[in-house]
Length: 225
Image (cartoon, rainbow, N blue to C red; front, side, top):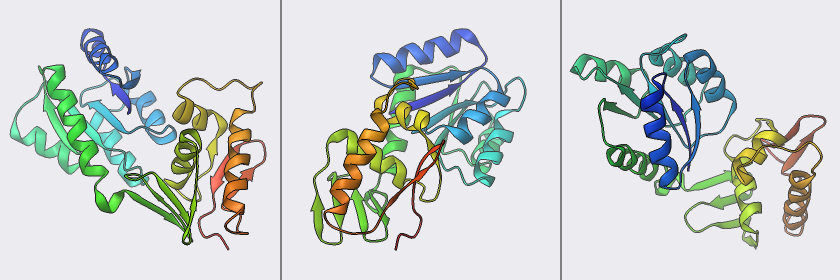
């Protein structure tokens, strides 16, 4: 699971980052609201841990901007404030959960797992674009009724593109999500993986599901025909 930690207090941020990484989470970190909003809108995260009081844009403003722009990444709002009104404000702005400081890292991780279970419920396990379907629970890919055998990397890349049909993902974004390391401009590993996926899908259908955006990256066609 890839998590963005937005926290301006270094000791608290380090505490969360170390605890999450020790449990196998991939973690990005940010200490101000302006950069946090850019990351939330442009990079794929499974969950964002968002402090309410931040330099620059505050957490509530970030939440509202994310939801207005259609970014539905789950968010755990974090604040030293524990009053009921503050919790309600965070949840009303679009947070999925609220955690008051101080807290134990085990509690944070339990909240992360709970959100993950909710957002990957049975009806959300299935991604569908035209006759192409992908099941996150069974890791089965079908074109119509034809099963497509993909490697784990191919499956993860296809699932990533199918999250938002019509949205263009750069090679850097794909590399960070699927391989979890920075993009090397001298490698064609993303292009090779896309080529393999296309070849396998083409064996079941003449439809081109994945479009190349020259000089940028790739996108899943919203309504393939």
